[in-house]
Each structure stands twice: as C-alpha cells, then as structure tokens.
Length: 387
Ligand SMILES: *Cc1c(COP(=O)(O)O)cnc(C)c1O
Image (tube, rainbow, N blue to C red; front, side, top):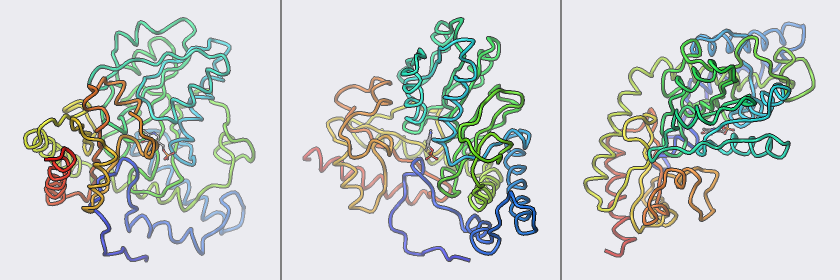
C-alpha cells in the first residue's frame, strides 16, 4: 500500500476545490491499476473481474443514493455529467420546446452548457437569487413557460455553500412535466442525498470532491428518462456513454462514497459545529467582516467571508505564507482579478466584494487548525489594512 506522506504542506482549507484520496481508497484501487487490468468488456476471466468490480461499485453508489444500479452512469467527473445532462436533456425534448431555467450562481459547467444551448437557439432564464444565494420559488414558478423543457439548479453552491430548495424545485418541475437536473457535486458525500426522496431526474456527482480520485464521476439518470448518448462509440454503460471504463477510478469512487456515507452522521455535525464556531469568531473578532451565503442553509464545511477594503488575492498570498491553503471564490477564476458571478449575484456591497475568500473544511479539519487560521486571518487582514 502507498504510505501517506507525513509532512503536511499546509492547513488545507480548500475541500470545495478538491480533496485528498483516503488511503483506503488508494488501497481499493491498487489491484485495478496493476494486475487486474482487464477490459471490463472482454469475455475472459481477467475482463470479468473488472466487470464485476465496476458493477459492484455501481451497486454501492446506487444503494447510498437509494437509486437503482441501472440508473447510475459513470462519467469523467462533474463537468461531463453536467454537460451530458443539460445538453442532451434539452436535445431530447426540443420537439416540446427550447426554454431552459437555471440559476445565476451555477458552476461554470452548467452555465457554459446553457450558453452553448443559447447559441443553438434555446432560450435560457438565469434566475436571480436572494442576498443569501437562494433561488426564489415564486420567480421560478413565474418563469416557467409552455416551452420549458429543463430546469437545472444546483444542490449546494461551491463558492458560498448555500443549499438550494431542490426538493421544492423538483416537485414543481415534476408537477409541470419538466425535466429537473441538479448539480450535486458539492453535496454528494457531504449531506444525505436520496433520489427516492428527492424528485430529481438527473443528478451530477464527482469523486474528487469526496476523497475519491480525480477524473471520475457519475450521472444519475432516472429510469425511463430519455437521455441520448453524449460520448458515442462502444456499447459501454448500456450504450449511453461509450469508452472503456475507468475501472480503478470507479472502484475508488465507490469506496470513497461508502466511507463518506458511513462517516456522515459524525463528520457532518462536527463540521457544522466547527463552521459555526469559525464564523462566529471571525465576525466578532475582525471588524468589517461579512459572511457570504446563508448563515445556516449551507454546506457543512463551507465558509465564505469578505473583509471590507481587503483584496482577496493579497489576502490569499499572506495566508499561504502562513501555510494556509484557501481560495478566492471558485478555483476556476483564480488568477483573474474579477468578482465572481456568485458574489455579484448575491449583491455583496462594493467595499466587500473584492475581498471574498472561501474556506472549505473536510473530515480531517480540526479545531486546532481553525484556531490557527483565525489567528493568521486576523493578522493578515490587519496588515493589509495597514494597521
Ligand atoms: C467541482 C465542481 C464541478 C466540476 O466537477 P469536476 O469533476 O471537477 O469536473 C461541477 N460542479 C460543482 C458544483 C463543483 O463543485
């Protein structure tokens, strides 16, 4: 087994960007990286072992989500799942209409897919959110048209952590006969997710956000939903997603989700406690600090703060010098000095908008780490304000 490196490079506060694979995950994958390398589509014994491993993984994931195994399709990650769900649910229903509803704060994998469809003469409504980042159900209801064929709203926001009312959105979509997709990449493995209780037709997830490997994810597709293939080729994934299966990745993803699900009743309340403690101290001890997103309807490990008059990029540099890894908004926009679409959408006041920093905690985050981050944060904010 690969030994975990003991030298911790930083206090890792960026679990929304990616997470470290657990030793058990690496261990579960190892046989399929070397040795059991058979193609899952071949008939001899070595291939059958890969097939068995893939189907076992599918069963584990389906059981956790309370789905049927045949409703789980393996993909290369969250971005592919989002692209597939949105582009092809829209395509399959174009005879019924070409209107899509989404929110203004979606991940770029969703927003850019919708923009792509606009180029193909679809109309897209980008729903405003309130100051906490929550989609307004009345606005959603009003924006439904006779030609609306798809609603896509994320479960938990990757920047500000806000949890959307996906249960109510899904119920409304179902009532109106509209396909409902949710990007649950930040939610799966963090909060309980069940497609038997949530009225959702399509749900995206990604392994590297829950301590699994990068480059693998899945799309839940409700039984009987029409969703044409996105990747054409061989007949893998029941002809709906061609390409030789990423056996090791799929096995690692299932192991990671199994661990996350089994630990959730302990990890989730612990992270919520740490999150509330962290927020309370920052808001009390640092002047001109603001918590972005909803105070409680948010992902367990997510905090997003703004500090008046402080530039996030400079703050991140100072934090990194003190061994702390955090992010300004989404990882995808680092390097670009612009205010993220999410921070703009929740109308963060100008004095605060440029100083938005995200801290996302995970299963290994301790109170000791949080205390160290708060000390560094206080010093860094004071230094940048020239105190
Ligand atoms: C990370 C993320 C994605 C993209 O997933 P990848 O597996 O990295 O492609 C999509 N949506 C959300 C909300 C994410 O956080």
